[in-house]
Image (cartoon, rainbow, N blue to C red; front, side, top):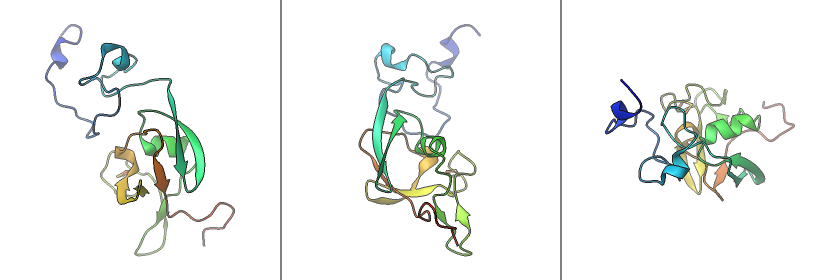
Length: 132
Ligand code: FES
């Protein structure tokens, strides 16, 4: 196979909804930088609010990746045993990364792309607490 001819018409295997500037339907300029064709890699950053704190994240990456990049590993507690939860599989299977995004609960952070102004609420223990 040569070039990208083999990719024409192939399904998106990521399970991610196309983000802003994704290769599908976007200008060729915005799709540049994606080595595997699964989405845009841009230098643009977006301000988002996580538990009331403003952070800057790379637009188009997943929310889970942005949170982990901010060392925000804990996103809540297991409702059964109270154990701390955080991203585990990174591909939408385990549901350990559920957060509330723009008022919608139960959103998997690993399947959600960063967009400017998004508001994220986790059920993580407050910083400085021992989590217990
Ligand atoms: S990390 Fe497993 S569903 Fe998101």
